[in-house]
Image (tube, rainbow, N blue to C red; front, top):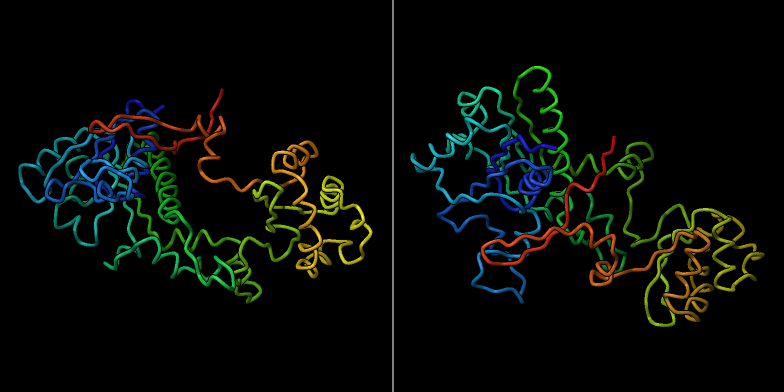
Length: 354
């Protein structure tokens, strides 16, 4: 869809490159500029213990870099900078995530580049806003914007999410801004500057938890997977073959169907569980009453019955189990980079039809 678009990626790590890969998936020509003095994007070296230490590519790097052209340059060098300027003259979009002040120092800021290409669209991701040079790492943002305080259990204490979720959300914000800027350019011929901070992204993503505080002065507490207003919702149960299932029972009809499937029908008339509010009040005892029935059947047996009745229950899968599913396999993109067969998940997963 964007085969005539040219994108220059002056970004590293996760959020910026994720945006670049989005455009690459839609057919744009994406040229990633990497610092030749430091061995390129730092994530090339973010390797797990079982990866080849001599390889120039890591799985982490591969996750957000696909179908790009890689140029190793030194932006502080006049000749290298001129090479980038020549690319920018015929480009549509710049994606950048420089530390505060570095874009101006390297003469890669929007005001400078706009003189080279007046219709340029420049997308910038920063940490805590352009007014500060504070280092911004995802775990720090998760801590300071409330996510870690809500995540985990009373026993575990605060826990970060297992992916750099705020970086990913910031990438989505920048994609939206860039697409709107492209629409504006199509209509007016004018370029644009789009700025997204990780901090603003995180705050905007608090959604109903923020509203709970803003309207009711309610500070969310870490309760694991449990839902404060619904039960049994988030409770997990072990099956006969030691697999884990999680419930998402949101109404009385589903609750009765659940009890019928697991053959715990005597609980249907238990006054402690007559409605959702009572189930929330008595959720600890309810979980104890349900536990033995899940242990009588295997994961496959239970899930088959739950799905047949359209009861909202999910199997807790590890990633090996996730990618046994053909639907998940269909979202994998493969590419050989520097002799390494790399794999990652698509970023553009929407479907558009006439």
